[in-house]
Image (cartoon, rainbow, N blue to C red):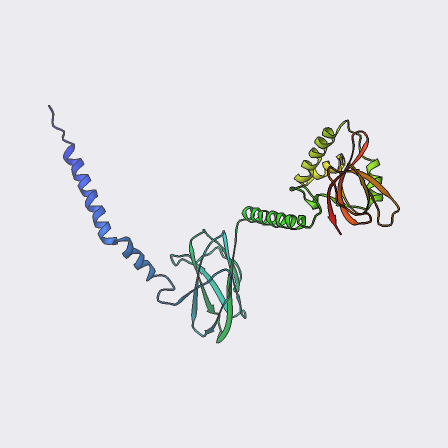
Length: 302
């Protein structure tokens, strides 16, 4: 069997690689030593670094020749740092390795940098040429990307709207648990009666509800879709009117305007418990299926 003459060369190459790696490792030191050495080279080495947060301002007094250092831990896509000072101050931004950021937006007193969540960034405050001394306030705020910010704003708005809806329902005489007063347009009874005559005639309640659901979907899309919804018009009116209770007979309930110059009988699926002459706000729907029907959805005291 022939000898494998290439084997000693491979062993030699591997051995050389191992010794090279070991040599580099010993030269560079441990990760802790490397980090410590880097920290002694950063511009703020040996200086007092004050930590900024997103809720409060820090105040101080800068003397001639001084540099004050600040740090902040990013929690969004941008960090904006501002200082309330004369223009003789200058703000600069650095990453955690001590490298000055060249992509700074803003001016000497209000700057913004793009950040990574969880990373720490450093800011220096110095006096410009001719500076002697002055006091200052410095603060920071963060900003998420536009999409995330808008989505967060939508979530907050939805939560606030839901809280307001639930608070409002506490005062209602009766209302479905999922009822939203904002979905009903406020009109007087004369306007409601006039609009009811212009509704398209549907063969049944289901057809009217299905067509109205399509209109609502387009309207919710915004832009050109809202224009389509407006052209389609309404198949169901959702109105609210301030009325006076007249009487109830079974599922039929009659209201009048406060001036008693128009009355309207609607249907209701329960006993209202109202007293004659009681003034209330009635939320109702109107559709033509094919006869015009007025259905009470909710009643609120006034």
